[in-house]
Image 1 (tube, rainbow, N blue to C red):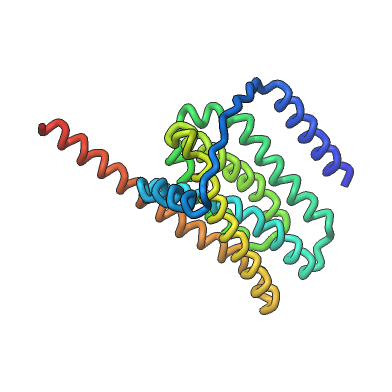
Image 2: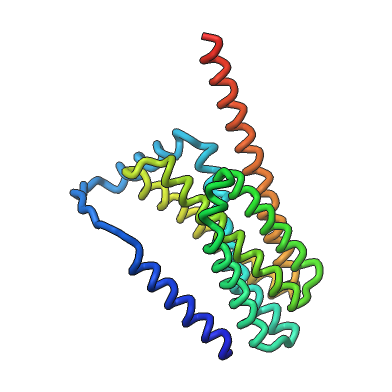
Length: 243
């Protein structure tokens, strides 16, 4: 527990220093009051303009419900197997370590790889790691793989945020964030139901494989959406050249 406390203190101190060092100038904008129904219509029109793109982003958002799913699943599984709480503390430390490693390399990764490819690879890697966890169910292996899981979870989130920053207009950003948050919250709530059901059936260990398969399907769909988008871009370019 001493090591865990030290890591938590170090991470908090590091985040505080980064917050202080980050330049930020707040810009006040006049707020416009709109009826709730009108806001819903406006949000629907935003998502309808680029359905495939926002579906891609929504699937990428599944990485957060996966994290909250594991935060509930891992201690339940460890408790059922009689594994001590120190292993769970080590598991949480391993996830934080992976996220810290991602922070060290993220600038180079974002410059080198496309955001869409980064999100797809992250989701597929996370799916593979979860299936491996569920296949072997070794506490040591779960902790080691969680380091990599934490790395790609952070990488996916940062790549998605950067993509949205470059593509989505600022006046639409809030509505898009809200819609994606609703989807993420829905997935998170459903994941808790799955955990409760698996625990009731005494099949908690299957949770790793189930969530891994869900992410694998999401990754394949994301890959399909990206390829479909690339085909459309190619056709549009060919039409422009033809004219």
